[in-house]
Length: 413
Image (tube, rainbow, N blue to C red; front, side, top):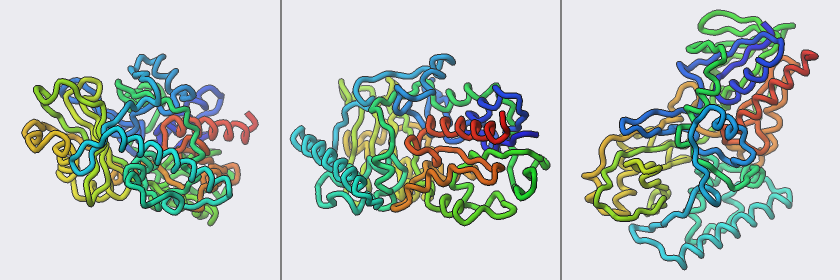
């Protein structure tokens, strides 16, 4: 066997697609019972699609999944502007006026300038250390940063904030990003329910021990998350070098969960805002998408430590958090209009162990170091290894293609 690819998320699937165009033999191993990794869609009883993981074609004009969606007939929307649309903001149940929102917009712009100025001065430090903490809009801005990175602002290197290649065009995959990735990868030969337990890479070939037997390969592409690499679930002989283990530890996964509530909207209001962001004392804000794509539901987003806390507390706590935010806007009678609920729980997913990677303060350089191959035997990909599209599905895809190219070059292909 020429190549063993470990992990059938976007990165592993991309590597397999690239190798399929060559004369090399390969196997694609996936511990889960499905492909897609953090791209996962479910079809709801009302006919809508709920993305438990990635949902937006970020930086759409340079996102390769746009062409894939067009080719496969998976629906997405091209909204104007940055794609997200305007939001109403509530503080303690009170709708903020246009003057207050303009003040918030100014603060967020000045905050971004502060991050870029600090980075240009060579200061790889946390967002927390860099921005104005006393401003009334600090909590809202912190929340947006946690959505973008899945971590809290004291855990985020400003390198992550300024290095991401953002075209400010984000298009929602109404047909389901998970469905898109699944359809893109469904033609590939993949061994599901195959746990990789150990990798011996000290000899001329690599020995991959799995729950279904042993594979001998010339090269191995590792597309598993940094959460899995840090967990010790895969034993390496010899151990990964200290520098590689430091890179893994410097890029931990945060958490990001989506909460869907079925809601009877009939008679509530003649017009609803597209999105509301609700802030209450004692907890981080929560963004709610109201009747997304004309479906009778609400989707709330939580990230960082708050997402971890709610996930550990259980599904009822996730439901209650979104319900309370909804009632802050529309009144307590909304409770009677809420039906079924569905939530993601990425920290508890045993095959991923979190949401996105975050470079810790002082550690942004570790993304490039994690991406470096070892001894022309082990090759690394996944969103954590992307220099400018981390935390995204398309970023993972691009790194899988990069790793496949490195393998081909190492074999003189």
